[in-house]
Image (cartoon, rainbow, N blue to C red; front, side):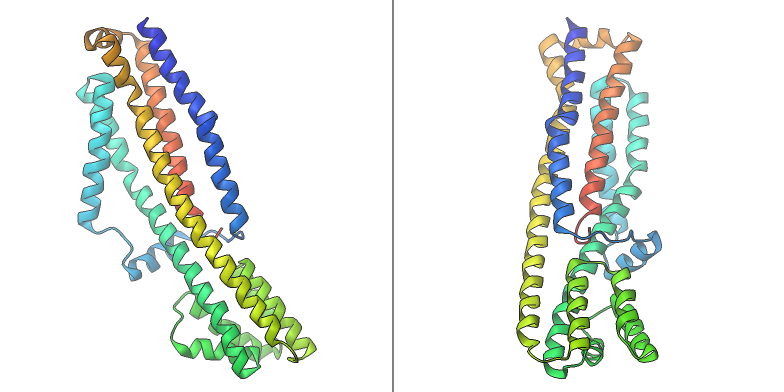
Length: 297
């Protein structure tokens, strides 16, 4: 009876992650891919350097809190699974080793959001500047000198301006910027300016106004998607925590003594380790998705 209950719990975990849980994850991932254009991965150096400048990295105190919460949670859960201080200690160490990785993924998400905000500022203000200067390069210089942009976008904008003067055309500079920030709104705006530059600036006001409205719509969709994904993320973690507690429910139904007696069997311990590993794997996968795909992809 006890073995059947344990196998039933393992089956519930597997079915959740391969059924409703996987379906929910897949739907959220598909939704993100529809909202965002693909962006090249950020390097570790880029993320850590900029997030440190922006004050996004964890402080020593925040790291300590993470160690207490994650390590403590892992210790409590694993002890209630095995009633072994040794196994609980091993899971605590494993959980703590994941903290730097989780902190980096968080920094990556914040960096992605920062880049997206900078691109939003870039596109909106170039359009506004062009309405005054009627020159794409002069518009770039106006945005550069306004002080509203920060590196790395500001640096790439300067490179873009230098390339335009050096080549006597904006084609190569636009191609350079598009390759660094291949967002829909960047590509579409640059394509519009290429057409205006080659065909003349006559009657460009309406086209630029429509482009600005398109950018506002896209930005609204991105921020709405971020809020939806945060809601999904909270539910995702809640479901994961509930799945961890299923074994405790079995203990209440069968009694602690019967459960502890089961732990003497090697195959029972293996099943319990597999349940924990399956939950951890999918939780890490969900955390990775939540932190990687915000604002840029």
